[in-house]
Structure formats: C-alpha cells, structure tokens
Amino acid sequence: MQNVNAEIITIGDEILIGQVIDTNSAWIAHQLNDIGINVSQITSISDNKDHIINALDLAASSVDLILVTGGLGPTKDDITKQTIAEYFQTRLIRNEAVLDHIHHLLQLRGGQMNELNIHQADVPETCEVIPNNYGTAPCIWLEKPGKVFVFMPGVPFEMMGIVSDQLLQRFQQLYNTPAIVHKTLMLQGVAESQLALLIESWEIQLPSNIKLAYLPSPGILKLRLTAKGDTTEILSKMIAQEVQKVLPIIKDWYYGDNDEPLEITLAKLLKDNNKTMATAESCTGGKIASMITSVPGSSQYYNGTVVSYSNDVKTNVLGVNPDILASYGAVSQQTVELMAQRVRELMKSDYAIATSGIAGPDGGTPEKPVGTVWIAVASKKQVISRKYLFGDNRERNIIRSSITAMNELRKLILLDLKIVEKN
Image 1 (cartoon, rainbow, N blue to C red):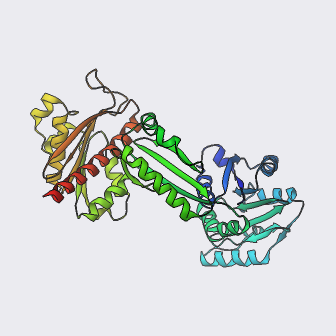
Image 2 (image 1 turned 90 degrees about the horizontal axis):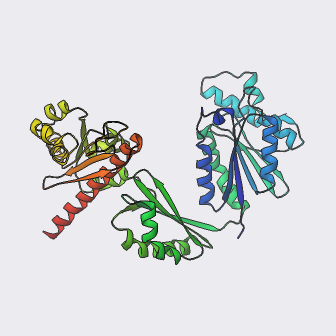
Image 3 (image 1 turned 45 degrees about the vertical axis):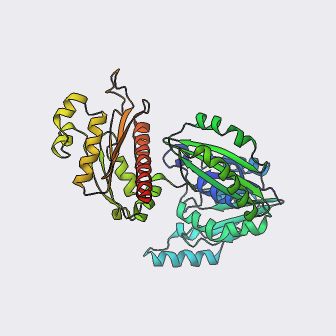
C-alpha cells in the first residue's frame, strides 16, 4: 500500500478578503480522503505570480499530489496559466479541441465567442488537458518527477464535475492507496468533555488502525471512527464491532450514524409511521420550521408553525390563557406546555414542539438568566417539557434550542411507539 499525501491550493483574492468562502477545499478533501489520499495542507493564496510559484514549490517539497483551484478564467486578473507555463518552463499553445468545446458550449448557452473566450483555449504545451464538460476553462494536468499537479477551475460545480467524473478514478489507478472506512455516530445532549471520560476505556482499547475523532458543534457531537487497511470489508466489520461495544455507553444521546442531521432522522421517523407535526416557536423564531422544511418532501409530515414571538400571539392565536402568562411568564413550563398542546390542535397534527426562552444578549433576570429555554413536545397522549440553560450567545442558543427540541420530539415518538407495542 502507498501512503499518498496531497495539498490543496486555492487561488483568488476574493477568498483572502472574505468575499467568497472556500467551499472547494473542504469538498475536495472529503473526496480524497474517501479514496485513501491524505490531505496534509490546505493553502489559500492571492492572484500573484510570485505567490503562486512559491506555493507550488513549497507543496512539491512535501507532498505527492498538488490540486489547485481558481485563476483559470478569461479575465486579466486570472494569471494562473501564464504562471504555470513559466513554472514548468514551457509555453502556452492553442488547443483546438478545447477551442471547439468552448465554441459549442457558448452556442448552447446563446453566447458569442470573443477574444477572451478564445484565449481560454491556450494551455501549457507540455500539459495533458482534462476536459471540462461543465464550463469553458479546461483542467490542466502536469507532472514533475514523483509529483502530480492538477489545475482546475474555481467555479464549484465545474470543479466538482471534473473531480467526480474523471480525476478520482485516475488517482485510484495511479496510486495504490489503502482502503479507508468511516463511521460517524451522531449524539445530541452531551458535552465533549463529559463523553470523553465516559468512553475513555473503550477508546484506549481501539485497534491501532482505527482512529477516533470528536467533532463538536452547537447542539450536536459527532464521533467519527476511521479505519485504514487492506479491504473495506474487513475494516467495516472491525468498525461495526467497535460500535456495538460503545453503543451501550452512549445510548442516551445517540440518534443515528453516517453524519445524518436530526431533521432528516426526524423526517424518516415521521414518514415511516405516517405521523404529522407542527411547531410553536418563540425564542427560536422559526428556526425549527426552517430546518424541518429544508428536507425535501417535508410537506408530507409537517403541517406548519406559529412564530408566537409576542404574548399577544401566544394568547390570541395559540389560545394560551393570559392568566398563565401573568402568573408564570412567557418563559415557563406552564406556558410552553400550553403552546405545544394548542399548536398541535390548531394544526391538526399528531405531534408538536414548542419553545420559549431568553436567547439574549439582553432580557435575562437572576431567576431566568440569558440562555434559559423551556422546550415542550406534545402528542395526543402526553406532554413532556424541560428547562435548559444554553449560555449567553444568541445565535448558538437558537441553534441549540432548535436541535434539542427536534431530538426531544424524536424521543417522544419512540416512546409512544414502545407503548403501542406493549399494548
């Protein structure tokens, strides 16, 4: 087996000034990792000849494969082709096949060929051209002893198409890389430090070819198991065995695997059981509704929401008793339970979620500090509510509240299903 290291270089002033987010590198790294190629570094540089040459030199001194995106466009600020021709001590020549492709593509798009488009067909004389079936800028493959350089357009969907359709297969044929298998366990409601202590003995006994990574984000903690070896079949069995060992320890927080967001897990649970849901949101301001409806086909199980941000909406739309609000306040168990019950009835749904809290940064009191959130979930049979203290960051509070609320509903549905099975 061959250990192959790669570096990803993105070229563009727009990335360095924050005008464009570099999503290309993350996507490329994921694809390379899946075929056993290690990404040892990701570098972003400006549209500057000296910077490009210096980055190529540094990458070639430490890795086997250099993948570069950006700078292949038709405008004067795209200088990558001229620079790499100089770096590889060659000249730019016109590639007739590329020129025909550009002409054909422009005709399909109703455009006219101009001088800038024609110059896009100029490529380093010593390169191999990898066709770009999605745009006008060709992909360029160049080599030095023991090193492969691939220059791709920076437009994400063009780059993704080239990598998926052509480059990954070539890399697998070129390099004898080890098999690699990932398994990501999804957890909600447990802190990274708490979990690390609970699974410490299990983690210590992991086989040497299986690595564990903790990947925390607001409301979610991922445990990623990565195994490298000779065959995917053997590795998959090894990981499956380790998962079975750890599941009894993490069962209270585990909700799925393979990097599946909670809104998808919840969607499957509702559809599989032919159930519907609704939401009443105060402090989350429609975030739960947005996350749920981001899943295609959510109209099959999601009936709607009431964003009851004000007390007037809580009373006049949801029908929460004003005396309850006066006695206990909007952020209370009594209020949030009534919100869940009322919206379920209003939307004629099997289940409902309700949230009410103090997202911050202002509005807290000694009794109810910023980050206090009440969440209730309701079915026809029961209402379950719980108070949380999420902290003083408004954005994180909204995200954590939304994710926690969906998980509470997931647990309620599973509880109802168990009750039905027993009966």
